[in-house]
Structures are given as C-alpha cells and as structure tokens.
Length: 347
Image (cartoon, rainbow, N blue to C red; front, side, top):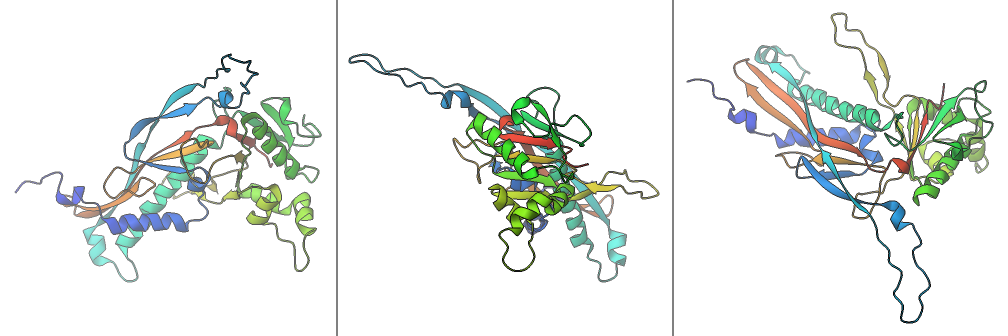
C-alpha cells in the first residue's frame, strides 16, 4: 500500500504535550516577554483593530454657551491598524533505533518535548527584544522618547533633561555619580505629560539589574527604611521605590553561535545593557491603550493562549517520531509614545 500524506499522525495534536508546553513557559521566570505587554488571543491569523487619536481625547473643547446657542462641537479621529501572526515552528526527530536502544533514565519523548518547547520560548523572547528593545533612526520607528547612555567624559549633561530632544544623553548608571532613580522618574513624568499615562513597568537586562542593586542611591533609599537585618534591593523593593507595578528582569541567555563541528558557543543575555519604561494595562480591553500588545493566534486545534502547540506524529518513511513545536504571534507596537527607552545605560 503506498504511503499516504497526510497520515493520521500528521493531523493529530497531542493535547497533553501542548499542556506541558504551557506549563514549561510559566516555570521559566527568566523569560519575561509575555509579562510586559498584554496577550490578546485571536481566532484569525490576521485582522484589523481600531485606534483613536489620543490628542483629540485630551483637548479641552468645551466653551461658554449663550442662551439658545449651539453647544461647542468636538470630534475625534479613528484609524484602522492590522496584525499578522506569523507561524514559526521547529522539530526534533527521535529515530526508532535510538529509542529502542536508549537506557534509563533517558526519556527521549519527554526530553524532545522540553527541547522544542524551550526553543519556542527562546524565540518569543528574542523576537520581543528585536521588536521593542532597540531604537530607530526614523522618528516614531520604535520609541518616540529615547536616551543614550554615555560615560562621564563624554557630552553627557550633568542632569538628565528629557525635554531637550528625542535623543538625550544620560550618565550611565554604573557610574557612582549617576542618578538612576531621578532619571527613571523624569522619564516616567515626561511620558505622562505627553500621553496622560504614567509608565508602570521597567524592563531591564540582567546586567542592568545587577548595577541597580548595587547603586549607592538605590541602596541608600532602601537602607533608610531598614530596621533589622541587611537592606535588600530586589525587584519588589526597586519597583516600590519607583512607584512601578513591576520591575521585569530579562535573565534568559541565548547562544548566538551557529551549529558547527566544533560545537562553539557564544552565550549572552538576551536583554543586554538596556532599559525600557512602558505603560500597559494588566489585561487588554476596549479603550485601554498600551505601549504594545501581543496578538497570539489561538484558532488552531490544540493551541494555547499564546498561540503555541506541540504535535507528536510518525514519519514512517524515516522510521522516526517527530516532536514539533509551533507558535503564531505578532508582537505589535501600539503606542510608541507610551515608552521611554534607555539605550546602553550601563558600560
């Protein structure tokens, strides 16, 4: 009988494996991409959404009204934007000969599932950094408000002034003379002044977090309220100090070296040496602005709320079992003026 494609294994989605993928994502606390901006499950791969003109909503159009006269009219602009959730996938084959010859405690099915799940999670984080954790030379390309970290001997102003232009200079936070608390608050106030929304999250790379934990200004502020034991600068205490909902630390690392015979590795933190202030609501909703949204395509059998699923099926002509991870999402910049990006904020 000839080989028929697709076979039943090709179209069957193993739901327990999909559940394992979701659980594995939640356990990896170093990956924060899905914690920064709200996730919007969508049933279609592409669609459109509406966006109001914020300036029209913040304008005072009310005027005095004389007896019998018309009231003052006001209008607001409405635009249409689109998303497209690209499908990405990766697989790992388990040859029958390897499976039949494996010794305990190897569990090749489980290990292959965790392997491709990790690949999916890593891709989501790398994609987030490539989309949001950068500047753009063209105004509005990424973030409207940007500050460049510089050394003390460069052209840095003694005091960070967000009002001086789109590309400001700020003394890098690894310099003891720097003022990260004031810098962050000035950035928050500047965004609030121009949008009406105060940033509520700070996303930083692990190297930046290490510097903030040891910065004399941060330690001094936290130490003043300490009554017993050592003062501890952690995510919660720094968030409370800055009046933020969360400080999110990108602790995940990735290998940038290509696969080779020598198996060379080049590991680095995905988040690098940058910091990003953003405003986003806890969950997506009508009339709720956000610096960004993630549109995850959930309209496929077995897909999680992040648009991810894992399939397990036979490749009989190869005598292998294939474990395949797939996800479809679009990390969309919604409000470029609802963020303040500090590029290269430490040396």
